[in-house]
Length: 252
Ligand SMILES: O=C(CO)[C@@H](O)[C@H](O)COP(=O)(O)O
Ligand SMILES: [Fe+2]
Image (cartoon, rainbow, N blue to C red):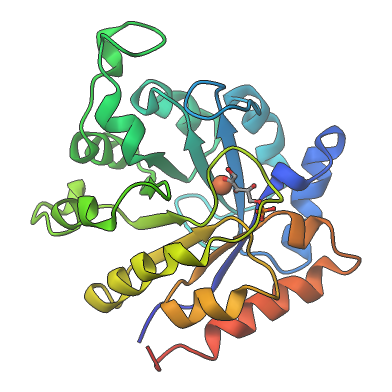
């Protein structure tokens, strides 16, 4: 049976002047995780915030130490140098550090914004490093990246080098409120077929209108920003997203 639904509202669409309260309210309304979009203006053409803001909002949400249940901070790192910020985000209270494959493979001393050798990494090394700091590791791919790049990483026999979650972007990363790209769903279906128990996250344009397609393909971790924060009853949207995923469990 595929894993249970995990609903992770993206706080990119929350009121940034009230971010701590927005996080607490969203968990109280039934969200499982909080999806925290970190953008650096290099990897994507937009900027959000860094570890100091995460440090400030983290105490607004309870979660048992060391657990990855309700209240998990799912940090989506849309940044050019994913290795560089792992420790800072661990200290800030990040539970799941999800980096982009495209950033990891091009983070070299020559082309990184910082120009430091610390930018060098490989996806497997980075996953191992994230695990060594007791966080879960996620790997994300953009719409232009084929799912095939993930097979070697997922089939690795060394457990510390395997990701806990894969994120399939269903919009171009950078902004909330974009239209859902159904063209990305065959990636989800291919992953689910090979990995029945893997957490597969979809991010971008998810709503009550698009959730059925994503759930049919096998996604179980559902990010939704504008659909949740723009709703008059966010709790109702969260319930509907969860139900759409959970009715398909066991049928995939
Ligand atoms: O990572 C991103 C955008 O780059 C997302 O997490 C968005 O914030 C999702 O917003 P909606 O498409 O649900 O409004
Ligand atoms: Fe995201």
